[in-house]
Image (cartoon, rainbow, N blue to C red; front, side, top):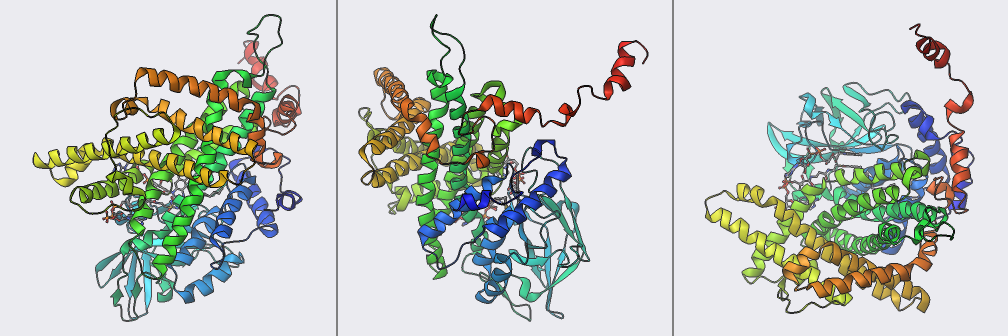
Length: 627
Ligand SMILES: CCCCCCCCCCC/C=C/C(=O)SCCNC(=O)CCNC(=O)[C@H](O)C(C)(C)COP(=O)(O)OP(=O)(O)OC[C@H]1O[C@@H](n2cnc3c(N)ncnc32)[C@H](O)[C@@H]1OP(=O)(O)O
Ligand SMILES: Cc1cc2nc3c(=O)[nH]c(=O)nc-3n(C[C@H](O)[C@H](O)[C@H](O)COP(=O)(O)OP(=O)(O)OC[C@H]3O[C@@H](n4cnc5c(N)ncnc54)[C@H](O)[C@@H]3O)c2cc1C
């Protein structure tokens, strides 16, 4: 990625801090920057790229688009509109729409969620009724709850969107399908007749993504606007179903994998800021007559931050591994082979939640580790948190996705008990789940996490079966056991994250210089030890850990923090974020945090004059008892 080229774009970087712009100005400024940015450096995925090139491009797009303190109103164009055309369009539709979309002749978004439904896709109410007389679909929003609500860029930016709507033919519903809909005139940008558009209002974050609402009043589109790769409607209204109705959900799987990469990047940004600040901040005097130490030398500070470095590495390694699986399954789907889709879906339903849960918590911990200055918007930690925490919800709310993963794990376990072979990332469930003695090695701990997952899955299946034996319906039994179903999914996800991080690092270790290998493997060791201590209850219950073993783990953890300390700054420098991308008074490479804090403070409009007009208007009369 040519950051220099991007950052040299005149006007891309803000003179006025975004914090002091109005809601409307923030959006307008973000459009200005997005146009500059995309004119200079933007390439989208090309179908004949190698997996490695695609992976690098995805990661590159994430990093480059990190230039914005918030996200770009073009975000959905790249992350969902284009992937949906690629994944859901026929060859002819791809040919036409990809050219226009890649050249930014049109700007699109992905409109699935409605005011009344986000998780329950089968409950979506937007109607697409086929009219065989005119060979058109009539799009209609029958009730307020059917208005599309949330899609990024929908409010004022996009002029096209993929609308996920319920297909009706001759009064019969044929499920949810994707439709390419022009929503604004390409010349005037006015909403087309029968289309209501607007912005949903200020949010915790994402305030320049231009999330909008969309309502239809019997708006007609031609038949060829239904993306018909996975299902078709013939001219006479005959519906031709696809091989698997869930192929329509393909874009969501893609984005869930993308989110894992994005969490690696977001967490890397936050820990770079917090750790560099911790290296320059000196505070307190534990030893009389000695200078105040760097707060990075407090072990509690190391405990807060070093796990974030290791977690960013872990998410990155897992993301690259998952991209390989994604692209391999996508190629199989293209040739009609569907049997590996459920495993990819289950993996994405584990890793997206766990990476967003951990990243969100650790980014907040990075902010808290910076004390008062971490609370400043100019530190760019609060905004980073705001962007990350959104991913807990979007692209499949985490609880719902963990329950989806549980659905696959329960099926796999029940099948295993009946003698059906387990495969892929669930094969370990067939392993021995009795641990006679604690094995404190890295591989031993990872094996213990697998045992925890096996035991949690088997025990929640027993709970489900007992509930059903007691007369509960499968649905009621499922709901009753759902807390422990999500716990079983989390345990599976934890085992995957740990084992993939370790195995991917082992693959790379061979080509690393000995000093680099040592440091990176220390981070693997720290990550595994940290999680063994975090989940010590599970280890006690299922992995025969004793209090002596825990004591040993604690001592090892402390030693690892000390071992990593000399390389800590180098490890975040290695993320190689330029100051303009960190966009933080605390995280700049030169360490001049105090000067930058003051520089940013002086940009506050309130500092333009020594006495604010409210003194004479309100305060003085008030203090003189005259109000
Ligand atoms: C700085 C730049 C960084 C970029 C980073 C990315 C940024 C992207 C920005 C994104 C902005 C946000 C966009 C959005 O949020 S788009 C909307 C996303 N919405 C969702 O994800 C909705 C979640 N809900 C669902 O997925 C389903 O409805 C759910 C499966 C949860 C519930 O389905 P339901 O209970 O109705 O059950 P079903 O019968 O429909 O389905 C269950 C069976 O279907 C299989 N299944 C489900 N989903 C999938 C899938 N996606 N792929 C494959 N298979 C799927 C599931 O396994 C079940 O199969 P079985 O019946 O065989 O068990
Ligand atoms: C910043 C942001 C950007 C977004 N961008 C887009 C976009 O571009 N395009 C788009 O289409 N959508 C977008 N969304 C919407 C997003 O996809 C939905 O918010 C998400 O799918 C969750 O659905 P929901 O909001 O209806 O929450 P709900 O599904 O109503 O969830 C609310 C609560 O109910 C629980 N719950 C729901 N169903 C179940 C269940 N079956 N079992 C157990 N618990 C359940 C959930 O766990 C959660 O605690 C965006 C959302 C955000 C926050």
